Amino acid sequence: DTGVSQDPRHKITKRGQNVTFRCDPISEHNRLYWYRQTLGQGPEFLTYFQNEAQLEKSRLLSDRFSAERPKGSFSTLEIQRTEQGDSAMYLCASSYAGGGDEKLFFGSGTQLSVL
Amino acid sequence: DQQVKQNSPSLSVQEGRISILNCDYTNSMFDYFLWYKKYPAEGPTFLISISSIKDKNEDGRFTVFLNKSAKHLSLHIVPSQPGDSAVYFCAAVRQGGSEKLVFGKGMKLTVNP
Image (cartoon, rainbow over all chains, first blue to last red; front, side, top):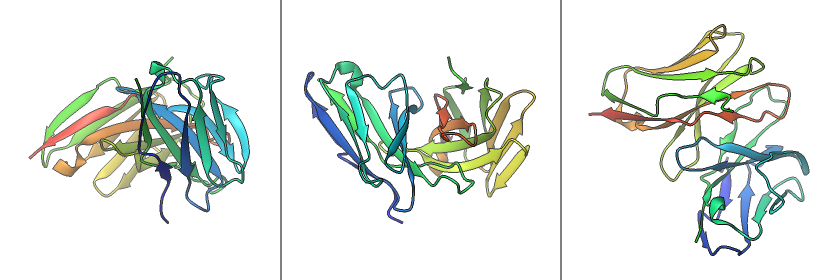
């Protein structure tokens, strides 16, 4: 069990640029979540996948955000035309649905700074 | 609209004493509750959980109490250790759905040697 892996750990970009983050979940987990955390706040739900299907998206996920999980394994989160308000820690988590355990396992996150 | 509330942003205790972290929720549909611990520059790590059919769950130094009528839960750490210093998040979920956790804002616990 190598845990949830996220890449990169840090990203600094200029306003208006596009950025893409990657998440590799725990291999046997079929659910994958993206959360965002800003300073002084708890993690806020963005979207989740069961296998390759994106089943729910938060209102926080504007049309500049897109997430994919093409083969039901790793996932990418892309932010287009970044804004300073996008600066946050982006957290990925995974779980196994149907196991009776709602515990999510989180990665270390990608810290995004938009200048 | 904060469905999970941690009203105290910080707590400082002496090593060896008890730490009590509180959490309130507003959504009566929540039926499973979790506590996560977070160190700086790391993701949250699971600590302990409780189902709404129970009022107490214990794991070593950590005990979570649930009062459904008051929509309140608390995490007790005893004895507290300096390594427990971290931000603690309370989370709640409605089982059988997306298993989407709703988090509180967190509380920073400092355990002084």
